Length: 234
Length: 223
Image (tube, rainbow over all chains, first blue to last red; front, side, top):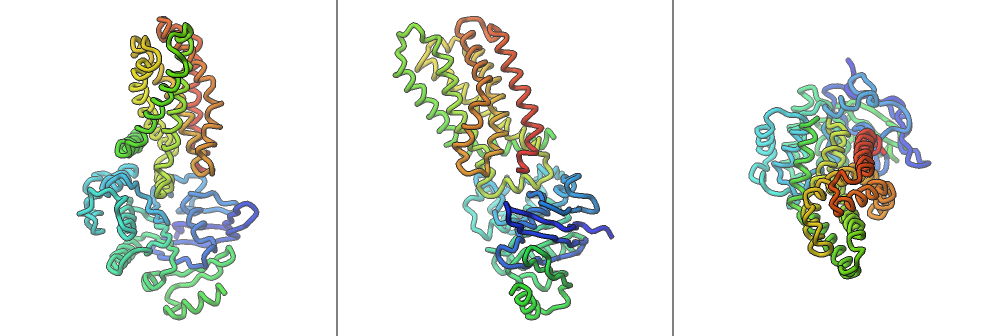
């Protein structure tokens, strides 16, 4: 099976400092991989490289068997991304923000898609409100709606649970499980392991610029994973 | 591609209309500059017609830079630039969408500025409103093309408000020289084609920097 996303000896320098060195891994369709690591380990940098926002200093990234640098548009069409920022225009309404996303992705019938996404994330009654007045939890739900509108095959998620209440976490996890059951691939950076541990299929730990350990999630229960993580990152 | 450009342009226009303070600030700044010139250079001066084009284009330049620096600031506010860059839209479409947004606002600004310029500084200018607006459109095209490229380049740089004019103004010298000369011809009653060589220079500048900026925007955004 061709991996959805793979890296080979990936490296990234900032000035003279090497943040990532020799990162090699594969993400396959149906994988839900949790990427763990200490603050400053390079997790967000890795996501930026994989999304094409940054160029690697060394090594290669392949998307569905083709090098990313040869045709980045293939990845962009398939990519959904939640980063640290809400990635919405504060002066546009929730509906306008999602319509913009749907249109630049060339979605057919964007009005219906956006209305459905807003309904599913529970923001339908705020559809015509400017998002600058939203709470952080509502921003996250806008992010989930953005993913729904984008119809991605690969999700790169950087701390997606921050600011979500219990009900929203459950809703988001349902979305992620359905996404991977449908053949989608997820790479998630999170420190809130309790939110998603049971749904993940793989665990990778980034330490000292390398993927230090990579395991099937079924190898651990939650307490064992915490114990393993602490040993690796000591 | 046209759909992508239109989507970005439509979004930028909606944002600019909702944030009218940017346009108002540009207009108010231009008004103040013209007011200062009108006091500093007495209207009975026989050289007033010769000075008028210089005054007009200095006003254009200084007020235009205000609008330009805001173009990418909107994208940076909540990480929207990231979302735009990882979307399947080509960098060329992003450039054209943002450049057209800046161009439209610059032309709108000039449409208001010409009567104000006539009122405060050089009354006969109102008789040449049409040719002056056409000249403003052609000049604003070169300004927006180069300005959008450099604005994108300096988005993530510290002191970008200072760096943008330092990079932009010297490169705009040929465009402004041509605009000043053509405007002098218009005010002398020769029409927009009165200074044909300068007109060719201006259109050449527009063409070269539109194409160059379109082709290099991808590289600039990767920096």
